[in-house]
Length: 102
Image (cartoon, rainbow, N blue to C red; front, side, top):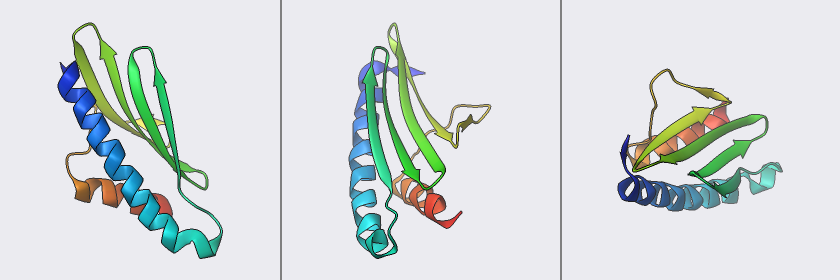
């Protein structure tokens, strides 16, 4: 867990980058019929976005509680034992590609 402002900032940066990568990927996928979905959820205690392609999904969630927040990645409904977060543009790009390639 970390401070809420830092976690929120990270979520916004990662979400913005995800939007750019999804747009680029969908430009290529458009001719094949299925596109990557990007869905946002905002509610009490959290910010979340989900990338979806066919029957696969990856969810990036920032859960806030009191004065701390935890950013974690959930792939196809399964979270790792230890919370994992994306630490670079390359990791996010690899995540988008893994949704398409599986």
